[in-house]
Image (cartoon, rainbow, N blue to C red; front, side, top):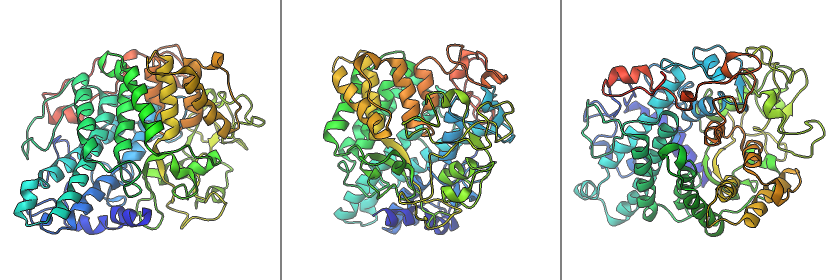
Length: 535
């Protein structure tokens, strides 16, 4: 089922692009079609096959930046490679932390390495615009798929039932974008299908209001989403919505000022015991191989961003970016299943030190390439400064080649069950009344045994240990910035890493940087928006 939806998601985007002129621009945060004879018009939706095509556009927007891969970009002012949602998530969640550093000097990247960004940073503009672009497509899809409109078009009950599930998925993907906006920027506008089409100034909401909206949406769509593990591979189900709900509850203190750790533990327990997703009893590396949709790893992946070397035209976004950019120096790209490297991303010494002995440690998650690489990052612009990371591969788990070497088959595991185990353990340690420490310890040791890291005892299970274990298990999966903020260690001086604050040995940074600035172009377009403090 994976291939069929991939081809709808990616290959047909070229066809869709011929009739589509949706472009995210800073003139209108609620990005909508320019007139009625364009993509998402009434005429377009007279075709019963159009509904799945637009749903596919929403999913594909997580990976590619335009309607022909890197070409025909969705976001005005940024190429399809730079504006890939997954690439932008990686840039904003990993580069400002101890887990990654990038050698390139593209405008805005060194500032992200050093926590010295400004409202003019093009990558912050990119993810702000990409998230609102996804929201705008979801909004128009929801406007065009009401029961009334389907009845007017003469569609039968079977199509109506299918579209009802599509609508729930579109609402999930919209909530996912609002989550990223809330997490990164705090107070942001909310637009829905009930808002007018065209230029208007959407009202900026408080972070707590955005949180409440996301929570309400995730609860409301539960009835409409496919039952757990019954949907096509690559499409979300009830468990994906529960995962996002658990995620916002775990971070509720940051977002709203109110702790919701018990709610997080309850939802995590529901996923663990009742969803049907199971811990993958395969080597850790299988989770990040080219065939991770069918090598046993897929049993724990709740929400994958699917990749396919033949179906995807994008060479600069998504997993293509993560794999190409992490290869350089003396590395043999072929050993990662790729045709070359871009000498960009590697890691910092503080992250490496979470694995006590890189060369001898039994922890198989410490996937570092060290030949010709220095542990120390003396010069952030030199790829060989800092250990390279080989976590992701475009080879199948048995070592055989994927479909091609320029665009990987590897799926990105956006949500997986191991994360739920760790969220449950953290919520329990933070005082969740429904949590059980012995159960939490069992989950953590299950993860560690698969990694070859050895089990721990109850006395070892502390919050500091959980933060480190999340890094070991989930590094480069777009969680680190959010995790560090929740633990109070992203800014300030309680945790220092090289080049934090713009100096080689690292320095304390101002706490206002726990929030990214609203992009200056967005404020120019909507003067009612207020900038975050400190910027």
